[in-house]
Image 1 (cartoon, helix red, strand yellow):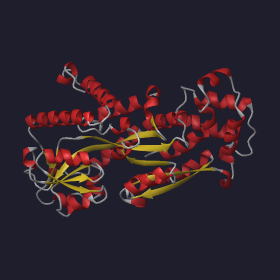
Image 2 (cartoon, helix red, strand yellow):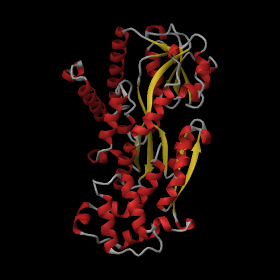
Image 3 (spheres, rainbow, N blue to C red):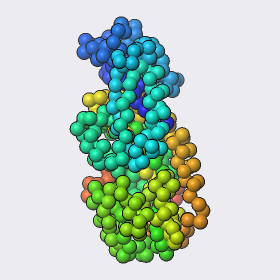
Image 4 (cartoon, helix red, strand yellow):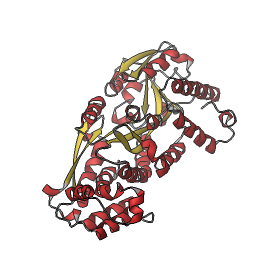
Length: 398
């Protein structure tokens, strides 16, 4: 994720001033002894004066500066970029990358770790190939923050965990609008649940259906086929069984290999996985990719509230959205690696059937408490912004 690791660490520099109540920020630069001590831990040797606090407040909430500019200015102002390495604050960020240390997500993050040093902080990045193990590390407190799939993030925040709802976000343009809305301060309260806070939401590309037989080009033809489902998500198995197909449980690490080895016939995956996970092996010789996205997937950075007050998290969320175009450029380059002859076009009538089925599934899963109703309403409003003649715009079920 370009810049997010650097921005995450830099945001820690404004923890004290950002955490001040709005009334205190408006009254002036006074800070309590506790706040002064907290800042002193971030900046040992720096004299904390009311004038310094006031300047940092002005920078933190300056709408005319980008997030990156604000972080750089605060770092220079406090002298944190000049601290010896052994005096710099350390933050542990756990990163899920199915390819581990050599994977694209971790590689990009590692590049940013070096850049983070200019803010006066240390970062300890820990790669995980097993997403479930990484989540346990976050729960235990061994990770200060963890980057995971939106499907996993649902256990920390059902509102943002519904971003990946089936069929709810049809295109990249819909996704950009949704993430822009979620990064706005008015939604800050929804980013906190219990001991955790959502620090950023990133696009991960559209999920498509990969099949080992091109004849599986309609819902009806999925009956009797073996479809891989995530073992921690029972609702996936329920939906697949409802189509008359056979759900085969696996974790996200094993699923691609099961498709490549012919253990399952159908796999849902983003296009970025085509080359990285060698999914062409499972497609060869008679398979293909359904040219209809099920949804837009997300990656979400979940932090511990004890480490990241929501005021700080808001600055990080703004920074996260600034990275949207860079991430999408990477995803589009990866999607272009898929040869055109793998695509399977489906009839327009079947697309309407897909859409109806997915709407039914969202309504049912909302009723079961799996999806968040407020998020589904927001996604519907965005769909209607793009296509106001949709039937759901005048007769909404969500």
